[in-house]
Each structure stands twice: as C-alpha cells, then as structure tokens.
Length: 139
Ligand SMILES: [Zn+2]
Image (tube, rainbow, N blue to C red; front, side, top):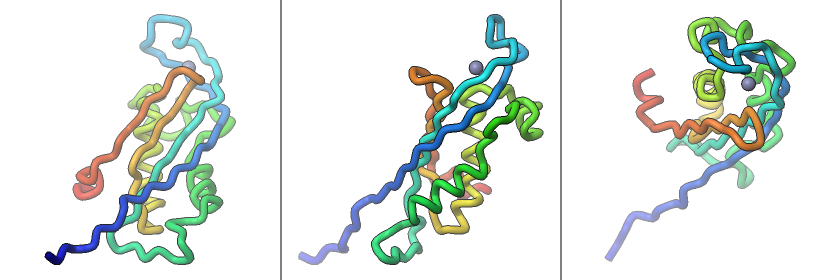
C-alpha cells in the first residue's frame, strides 16, 4: 500500500526579554499606577507549506531573534508605544496580541507562520496565544 510521505511537524522557538513600564488605567489595584517589568517573550514558528528548508534550518535562530527584538517595546512605556495600546490596555494578553500581529507580517516574508507566542510579565504569570491558521487566511 502506497501512502503519501508525511514530514514531521517542525517548530522553532526563541526566548527574548525586554524591560518596559506600563499601567492599567481601569484596573482597581496597584497596577493602575505606572510600574515596570522584565518581560519575557517566547515565539514559536513553523514553516509555511512552500518553504524550502536550506542547510537544515527553517531560519537562523540569530535572524529570528533579531526579527523579534525589533518588535519589542524595550525601555519604553508600553501605553504610548503604539496607537494599539491607546484602545487596548497593555496587559500581557494585549502585548501578546500586538506582537502576534506585528510578527505575523515580518515572519510571512521569511515564509514562516507564527505558531505560538507567550508573554510573561513576571516569572509566574504569562499570556499565551496559540495562533490558528485562520488567523492568517482572513488577513
Ligand atoms: Zn504590570
């Protein structure tokens, strides 16, 4: 019986950190006031179907880190970093959404799909966005 050869699912991840301040204006508690975090971001990518893997790499980790670093609001006040955060308070959830949208475009140029993004605002608290394929098809 002949079957179509199946290639394994392949995912690549990098972790980056950035320091940034934020405040949550509508929050009832200390996070209403400006404060800072050392944020951690984990970005996981997978190849678009037509990506041809060269030299055994989806992308050089160094290049993926560079792409992610250029999107991060390092040493910034996130509330004023982009217009997105005027309408959406800079919670870990919204930082993940903002980064997903920004990275999606940059990764598409490299024929990569954003598979997951996880944003920690402390060692013990993160927001994780698992990006469905439909996320790409409608934009
Ligand atoms: Zn905070």
